[in-house]
Image (tube, rainbow, N blue to C red; front, side):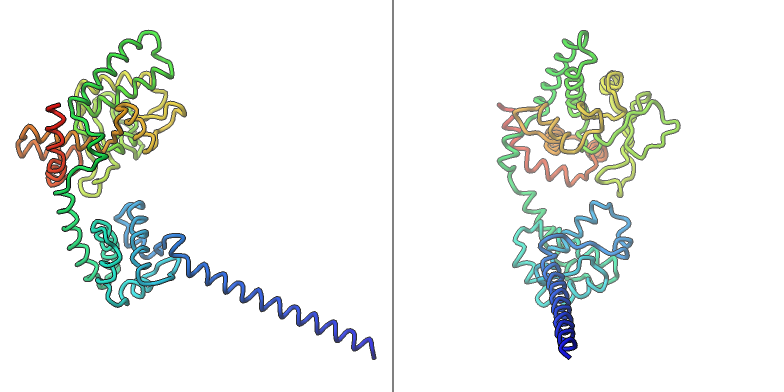
Length: 364
């Protein structure tokens, strides 16, 4: 009799313990999921599901990622939690069922450019999904115009003023590097030091003697001997013809491949570079003998023009400012805009901000 009581007591306690642990684990799991769910918008950006991603197949992956970031920012204005993967149904719930949408966005995103960028992302997604995008399109249209006006009439920033050069400065630096190259060439043509120096000379020459291209146009380029049997999808420079074919660039969706003929002086410099360059890339990491990264490309430009912090973007502004100072014809402006991959309006925008700065530097 006591044995039965003992086993009953032990069994009861064991079952009760199992039930307690089950309840604890169950509620802990729910609580954990709720915590993750409620904080997901503050930890990571939402991702589009396959249907939305496929609807955006005309955009680059990098652009789609930016859309995800901007839509996450908009949804955070109205909701404390959201899904990890965004579906069409989620877009309806999180973007189209909010009260005072326009007023809330305007009140919480003060920067007009940021407001335009975020609402543009929402407009694109909703439009691709055949959903009502009128509110977001109206906001985008209004604030992109206001943002452009503000930037057009804004003065150059202190950073831009401190790092501004003229094209004469760029060409003078190229001349200095050329002298160093000529002095070192005979004895140290194959040394690591000379490799670094010649690449600086090459890159400075590209910006001194040709309309300033974006950094990507150069660091994504491979050297080829001829156009025959070219299998690479990268940008290519043909050593035999002096032709630079740029496949991957900011405006590739609008204008496709850019086919550029480099001047003789650059062809000669690149040909000599190909003879000492241990890779088939135009611009390289001289330590690892591999293709250079975007950040390393900017660092290389900084070393060339030190103590100035000069990027490819700044060099483009410098080139355009100098170009427009000489009152080029409409046809010439179109030709340069096509090479550089921007519009005539972009030329006006840059010139309006930097013409006074350029004149002051020239007078000095």
